Image (tube, rainbow over all chains, first blue to last red; front, side):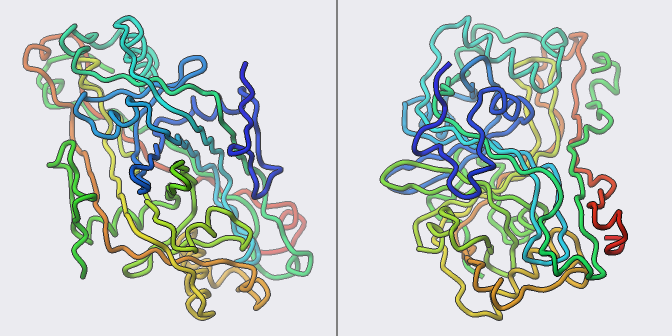
Length: 208
Length: 208
C-alpha cells in the first residue's frame, strides 16, 4: 500500500485531525456519493461535482464522452478530488466556538481514461451498486454502444489525506456558567420512500 | 443586479439545466452549509470544504487567521466556489440512464478580507444564524479579541451559474417493458435529536 501522506496532503491547520491510513480514507470515500473535483486550467481553478465510486486503490468517474470536466480528468490534467461528509452542527456557548463535525478526504493526482471494456463495465456496475446495493441485478446492463458512449476515468488513490472532527464543542471555562446550550445536532442523509415513475404507475416494472 | 452568466459560467454539458438568475442561485446557496473552494497555486489545483453564509450579493467565509486556505482566499487569489445539494437518486431500467437529481452553484471570482469590525461581526452572526435560526440570541457574541482572531473573507457573487436536475429517469422506449423499477429515491438531510454536552448534562445551560 502506497504512503498517502505527502507534503501537500499533510494537514496543516488542526493537524491532530489529519489521518493518512487507507482504512479511514476508504471508509469516507465509500460513505459518500459526490466528489468535488478541482482543476487548474491556465491558472483558473474550477470545481465540479461528480458522482464516483471507489474500487480498491482508485476512484472511478464516468459520464458522457462530451463531458468537459470528465475529459479534462481523462486527459491526465493535475486534479484534486475532495469528498466531504457533514455529520453534526456543533453548538457552543460562544459564537466563536461554533463548529461542525465532518469527515473529509482530499486526494491529489492525475486521472487516466479506462480503455478496457471489462474494466469500464466493472466501474459502471460498481457505480450502480453504490447508488443502491443489489441494483446491478435490477437493471439492464450497458450495451456495447452505451459503453462506447461512456467515458470512464480512473483516479489513483496514491496521495491523499482525511480530516475528521468529532465530539462536543470546545468551551472556554469562563463560558460554562452562561445560560446557553452546548452540544451537537447530528445530521444524517435519509433516503425517503421511492417515487415510482409514470411507467411503473401504469404497470411497467416492479418494486425497486 | 450584475449579470451572472459569463463565458466560463455558461453550462455547456446539458445546457438546458443551466440557470443564471439570482433567485435560483441564492436559494441553493442558502440551503447548504458547506462550499467546496478551489484554488490553483503554481498550477496545482486544491479543493477545500469550507462553511459559509450568503449575505446579499456575497458569500462570507470565516476561520482562524492561521487557516491557509482562508488566507489564500483573503489574498485575492482567483477561486472557484461550488455548492452542491443532492436531492435524489434516479433509478432507471438501464444502468446507462441511472442519474442523480441535484442543485449546484459554481461561482468564480476573488475574495477580499473584511476589515471593518461591524461587517465582520455581521458575518459571524449570520453564520451562527445559518447553523440554527435564532441561535444568535442563544450564544455569547465574539469578544474584541475573538474578532481579531477571526479572518472573515467576502467573495462577491458576480460570476455564477446554477445547474439543476429534477424529475424521473429518462428511459429508452424499448426498455419500458423490462421487469425493472424506475423512479426516484429522495435524499434529505435530517437534523437528529440534539446531543447535550457533559456540562449541560451536569446542569450548565439550557435547551438549544
